[in-house]
Amino acid sequence: GDSVTQTEGQVALSEEDFLTIHCNYSASGYPTLFWYVQYPGEGPQLLFRASRDKEKGSSRGFEATYDKGTTSFHLRKASVQESDSAVYYCALSFNSGGSNAKLTFGKGTKLSVKS
Amino acid sequence: EAAVTQSPRNKVTVTGGNVTLSCRQTNSHNYMYWYRQDTGHGLRLIHYSYGAGNLQIGDVPDGYKATRTTQEDFFLLLELASPSQTSLYFCASSAAYEQYFGPGTRLTVL
View 1 (tube, one colour):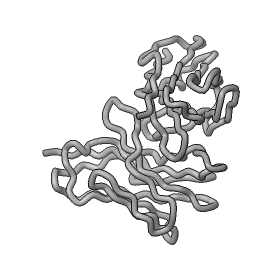
View 2 (cartoon, each protein chain N blue to C red; view 1 turned 180 degrees about the vertical axis):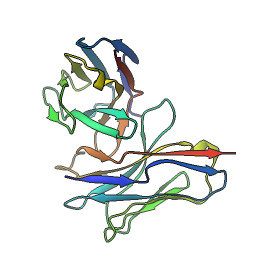
View 3 (cartoon, each protein chain N blue to C red; view 1 turned 120 degrees about the horizontal axis):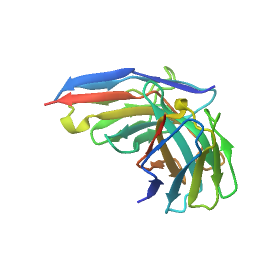
């Protein structure tokens, strides 16, 4: 079945550090890829998505580029802030009949940023 | 903006107990979902629905039932709760690509 593998566990950075969270997927087809962010005490929320090869998604200084060749969608940010501390999930979905279908999530990566 | 609410926010029950978790969305979305979130596993889909009376099986359905009574309301039922079902449960809804999540229900099975 479809699966998403992302940087496991926790990433600890200082403010203004560069962030990379790796995400690779395995799917029999051409999925839409997502990054969701979950702040403490809240449900996940969409950060951005990309639907085709070489498309770049971005939001709040975060970005990721869909790479079908390497089946990757790595999350990057040039300069993290303490407020970016959260759990980040990579996910994929296959659009079904024009409506949303289920998401397959990675296991999540907890980002902790200290000032 | 989509609004998804869940109740209760916290629940403690005993092994073998009967639990119902409730979810309501007020944005007329067709799709609704139930997930569980566990350390080391991330978010896993239990059941989902694309409309009133419809139910689709997710990736970890064992021990769970669900029912979608209206477009707004989606319920998760644990009829014989077990300690392995101790988890944080999220409901979500969507109309297109984006899923909107509720605040979660923390369930503890003693």
